[in-house]
Amino acid sequence: MEVVLIDDVEKLGKKGDIVRVKDGYFRNYLFPRKKALVCNESLVRAYEERKAREEEQVKAEKEQFEQLAARIAGTFLSLKVQTGEGEKLYGSVTAAHLADALAERGIQVDRHNIDLTEPIKQLGSYELKIRLHPEVTAVLRVKITKE
Image (cartoon, rainbow, N blue to C red; front, side, top):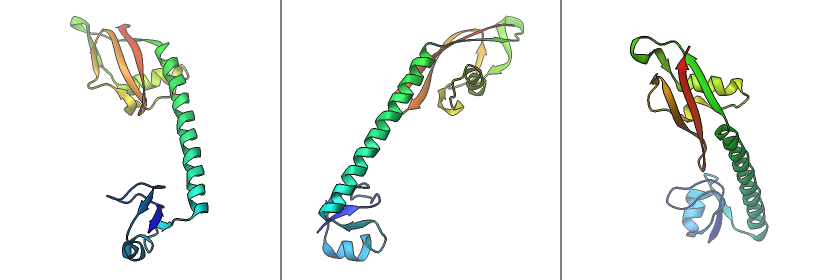
C-alpha cells in the first residue's frame, strides 16, 4: 500500500514522502497516530505543491541571509575598551557586545550565532564567523583598540 507521510516517521521517511508499507502497519500504527494517509492523486498533488512552496520559501530566506552576510562583510567594527598593563583588557569583549555593536548599525544578529570560542581579552584585529543560516556564513572584521 502506498501512503503519504503527514509527519516524520523514524526509519520510514520524512513528512510529505510517498512510501510503500504493509496494510497492517498502516492500519494499526500509521493511521491511528495520524502519521500517514492513503495515497491518492489529489493528495499527492497537494503535497507536491506544498513542498514546492516550502522550497521557494527556503530559497527566499537563504537569499535574505546572503544579503545580510554581504552587509556584515562590508562592516568593520572598531570597539574602544579600557586596558590595563600589558595591553590586557579590563574584562573582555563577548559575543553579546559584538551583537549589540552590530545592532547599533542596524544589523540584527543573535549572539549565539557569533562563532567566538572564548571572549576576546587582547587588543588587536579579529575575523569572526557568524552563522546566519545552515548554508550561509558571514565574516565580521573587528578591531579592539584602547579607549
